[in-house]
Amino acid sequence: MQDRYARSRQLFEKAQKLVAGGVSSQIRRSEQPVPLFFAKAKHGSMQDVDGNQYVDYVQGMGPNLFGHSPDFLIEAVARAMRDGLIYTGQFERELQVAEMVQEAIPLKGTVRFASSGTEIDQLAIRLARGHTGRPKFVKFEGHYHGWADSVNYSVHPELHLAGAEQTPVPVPESAGMDPATGENLVVCPWNDLDALTLAFKRHKGQIAGVIMEPILINTNFIAPRKGYLEGVKELCARNGSLLIFDEVITGFRVALGGAQELTGVVPDLATYAKSLAGGFPIAMLLGRPDVMQTLGDGDVQHGGSFNSNVVSIEAAHASLKHIMTDGKRFYQDLNNQGNKLINGLRNAAAETESDLRVHGLGSVFSTSFTTRANIDDYREHALYCDENKYHRFRVAMLERGVRLSANGRWHLASTHTDQEIEQTVTAAKDALKSV
Ligand SMILES: Cc1ncc(COP(=O)(O)O)c(C=O)c1O
Image: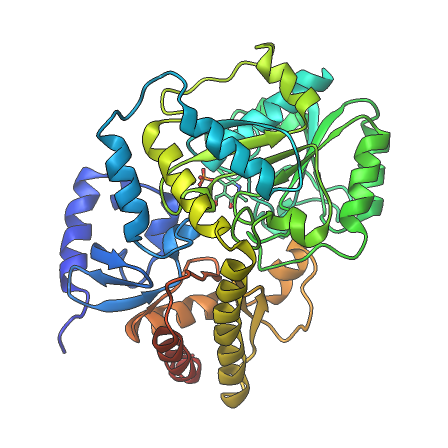
C-alpha cells in the first residue's frame, strides 16, 4: 500500500539531522504517524508535501482567527512594510491599536507590546512583583503561561508528584529549569476558593499576584465556577495582590472583550497574544494605569528588539479593524459556525455510542474521551480522560483529512465553510467507529 506520508517522512528524517529533534517546538513532535511538512495553507485548510488536503483546526494553536493567510491582512501588512519594518522608535499606528484595545476590552488601561505569549506573561509577573515589592505569585494546576522558568510548573504534572489536592507542590515541566524559581511559586488547584484563601493565609503579605487562564483552555475546556472569579478578585484586593488574567488564548477569540466580556470580571493586568493579529506574532500587556506607571517610570525594566514593529502592529490594526467593523456579528458568526461543528460532533458521538465529550464555545472548544459529564479541574481531567484514545482519534482524523491539535483543542476560523464542517463530521463518525 502506498504510504500517504512518504515525503513528510523523508523530510522528517532529514530534519532530525538539521533541527534538534526535527522540530522547532516540542509539541510538533507529537504529530503521528509523523510530524507533517506542509506546502501551503489557505483559510480553513492545508496541504502537506505529499499533496494530502486537510481541514485544519490547529490554526496555529489559535492565532489564525480568520484562517490561514487572510488576503486583507497580507495586503495591509505588505503596504505598510514598504515604509519600514522595525523603527525601534514610536509610530502613530501603535497608538491607534492602543485606542482600539481600549474600546474593545473592559479593562481600561495602558498597554505594552511584545512578540510572544511567553514573553508577555513574564512581563506581567515581573511588573506584579515590581509594583507590590513582594516575591511570590500564585499559579494554578493545569494552566499554561509559556515555557519560561519562572512559571513553567505544574501544567500537566503526574499526579503522584503533584502533592496534596489543596496544597500542591510545584512540579517543573522541563529539565534544566532554575530550581530556585519554584521557591517563589505557590501552586493551587483552580476553581477552589478555599484553597486560594489558605494560600493567602500561609504566605501572608508575600503574594505579588495571582495569574490564571480565566477560562481554563490548556486543560480540556473548564469554565470558572459561578462566583469563583469574583471571589478571587476579592481575595486579591483584600490581600493587596494583583489579579492577572492570561488571555493569550481567550483574548479576541471568545469575544471582542475576551474572557472579561464573557465573565464580567475585570483583572488588574491582562496579557494577550495569539488572536490579536490574525497569525502575525505579537503580544500585549494591558493594565490598570496606576500599576502600569511602575513600568512607564522604568522602575520595572522591559525591552525587546521586535517590540511594536511595523509588521505586527499593522497586522493588529487591520485585524481589529476587521473584527470591530461589526464586533457582535463577527463573533456571532464564528460561534454559530463552531456550534454547528460541536453539535455535529456530539451527534456523531451519540450515533457511534462513543464517550467523546465535546465541550466549550463555538470559537474554541475541547474534545476528550470520558464518561464523566463534568470535568472541573486538572486532576479530574488527568484521572478521567483517556488521552491515548484521543491520540488514536487524532491519527484517524488525519487519515480522513482533518488535522487536530495534540491537546484536543479545536480553533474555529471565520473562513471555515459549511462544507468543511460537514466533511469534518463525516470523518469523525468514521474515525470514532475505528477507535
Ligand atoms: C494561555 C497561554 N499563555 C501563554 C502562552 C504562551 O504563548 P506563546 O506560545 O506565544 O509563547 C500560551 C501558549 O499556548 C497560552 O496558551
